[in-house]
Length: 207
Image (cartoon, rainbow, N blue to C red):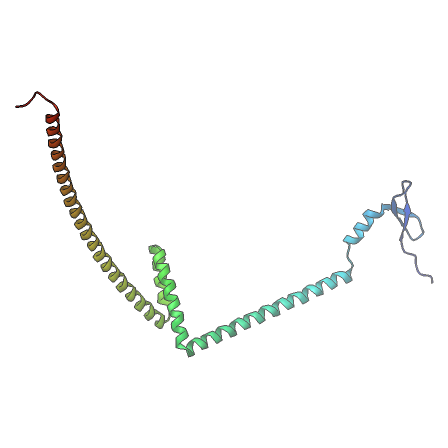
C-alpha cells in the first residue's frame, strides 16, 4: 500500500510581491493562506519535544554544578577556620596581638558610642576569651592612669600661666604709673619755662 500524503505548505507571492505560506491538505486543496513573516514567527515560538528535553538536561547539569561549587566552598571555609583556630591555639603571640587589636577597637567604640552602644560593647567583651578580657582590663586601667596624669599636668600648667600673667600685669601697671608721673613732671617744667620766657618778652609788667 502506498503511504498517505500529509498536509504541506508551499510558498507563493501575492499580487504586491509579498511572500505567502499556502497550507494544503493531502489532496492538494488550499486550506489556509498566511503571510510568511507571521507563520515563521509562529514556527520559532513552537519548540519540539527534543528541544524541550535538551533544555531540561542542560538546566539539570547547571544545577548540579552549582551544588558542587557550593559544597566545595563550604568545605574550604571549614578547613580555613580549623587552620586559624589551630594557629591561634599554638601561638600565644598572635592571640595577644589579636586581643590588643580588639581592645583598641573596643576603646574607639566606647569613646564614640552612647549608652546603649556601650552596653552592647560590654556584652561583646564578655563573650571574648579570658585572655582578651584581661588585656582589655589592663588597657582600661593604663588609659585611666594616663588620663589622670595628663589632667594633673594640665592643671599645673594652667596655674603657672595664671601666676605669670598676674606678674606681667602688675609690672606693666607699675611701669605705666611711673611713666605717667614722669610725663607730669616734664609737663610742669615745660610750662614753668614757657611762663618765664613770656615774662621776659612782655615789657612793662615788672613787679
